[in-house]
Image (cartoon, rainbow, N blue to C red):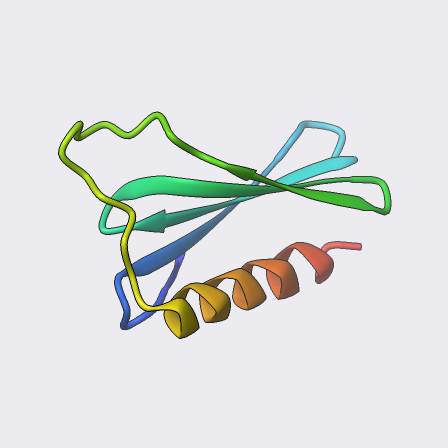
Length: 80
């Protein structure tokens, strides 16, 4: 079940079968813009550029994006 923020961001959690690797996807207005990947204790962020809509512009309020990143990090850390 995704976390939906009023700002248009949505956060989705994915995991592999074993559960050692987690991915949180952050979407904005239906476009995936970033993944946070966790394997073991390491976390990394991958900024997406392969948008479905070629006219999509990833432009949003910084505080909204920071809130989405914070929520995504809390979600991925809750699965330790």
